[in-house]
Length: 225
Ligand code: AMP
Image (tube, rainbow, N blue to C red; front, side, top):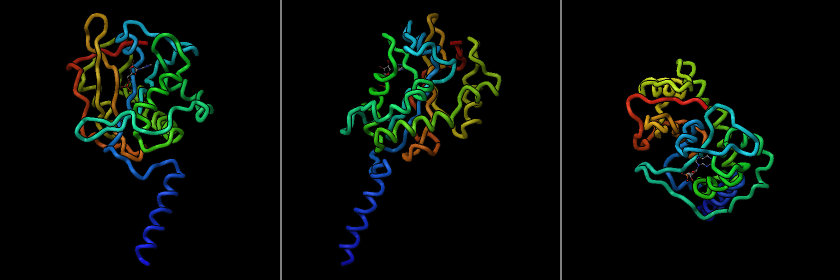
């Protein structure tokens, strides 16, 4: 009888959790929430294409929310539902504001979001809607540009120490982020992407269990966009 009740309780719990959009199995250790500086993406690609909606704001933009393992590896392209834009059509304005596509040819964002969902979102334990809502919620609560500006770090093409950038972001976020750099046309290292670590609940900020390998030098530039 006791074991029968245990089975019933377990299946009820599973149903409740599944209905709320969160799978009870999260086969990964944490998320990287990755934001990108558009000025550096355009340098990296030599050229980029503004989305059909026009030039994005000069602000950090979402790259993705990526399930990761503590050893630095990550799951990708997990079995799951394929991308369905109709399920998030009411979020499209916000996605176009905060998750810009900059690849060529110009698009409306759908191709980029679909890629991110298929590669990373399907491994997140979230259904598609919960995944995109979680990403937007994170973007609303983590304002990297303001964090840098309040420490006098501006996207003005100036050069800053890596230490100053890390310090400004750590102070604002409460946890040290991972930084990724790329090179501008002159070969100068510049701030490209910022990795903030998030618990498997897709909302709690945590200390990073592992950092992406460092691609920055001790001084880096912060190009305008
Ligand atoms: P991922 O596969 O999630 O690691 O992301 C890498 C892919 O995303 C590459 O194909 C990039 O060219 C693409 N990508 C990165 N940033 C952007 C962006 N802002 N707009 C469009 N595609 C992007």
